[in-house]
Length: 275
Ligand SMILES: C[S@@+](CC[C@H](N)C(=O)[O-])C[C@H]1O[C@@H](n2cnc3c(N)ncnc32)[C@H](O)[C@@H]1O
Image (cartoon, rainbow, N blue to C red; front, side, top):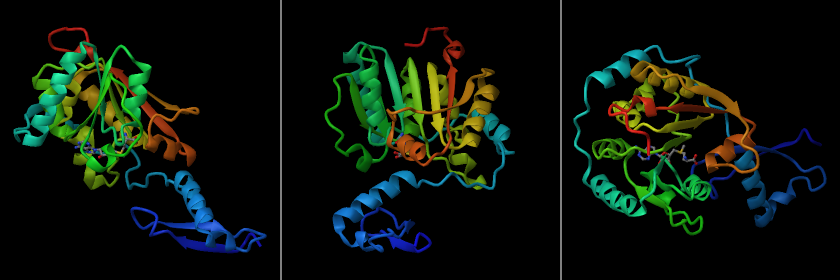
């Protein structure tokens, strides 16, 4: 009986077309899925626990990585920041100044769950979550703590504006950035992007999390090439409190999660302690 597999296409409920295979229930013979409430529940469970591990033709760090990182270091990126990010940054800067607390940046915060968690964990800090997706930022996850702010902006510009304004975050989180696993996509990964030197120049304790070990290794390699600083890479188990929805999805699918931590403070050119 268990051998009977049904193929469930859940186009109506999910943002993209996704196919799932589910076992036929031994007693109900599959009829369980005819009830909408049961169907939504099952789809919910399947969505949470069925994230696939990253597939890439890369078996290790990209062979072009060193060249790309050096190129970013040697040539400053000239594209002027977009007006909407300029305005969003100016507003965030005013808010930060009024907070009079050290900054924590949550870069690519998605729906902002991690921004909330960080703000609760660090009530003596001001936490800014940045994401370019209005849709994600607008999801209702309850009120934001007073010491947290969500900003819709393109990080490529936001980081450069933050650098120019002399921001020195005490902590900087990059939680599950888009992996861009095709080897032709190296330039889209943060460490392969021309903005990488600006991101690092902000200093502070930087933490990157990913479900793709190669992404984390490449990023760490980029930091070593640019700053000569060695961080720490480790796998970890999040425990019951997931920091972000992606962490939850990967964790519940049994994927290994990777964390890279590095203290960039010593690299600050003016020797300022990280705020
Ligand atoms: C894989 S999601 C992870 C979201 C969240 N950190 C989490 O773990 O649930 C990557 C996020 O980075 C954001 N992102 C990607 N490129 C960006 C950019 N240039 N500027 C701002 N946000 C960006 C996307 O909108 C998306 O929300």
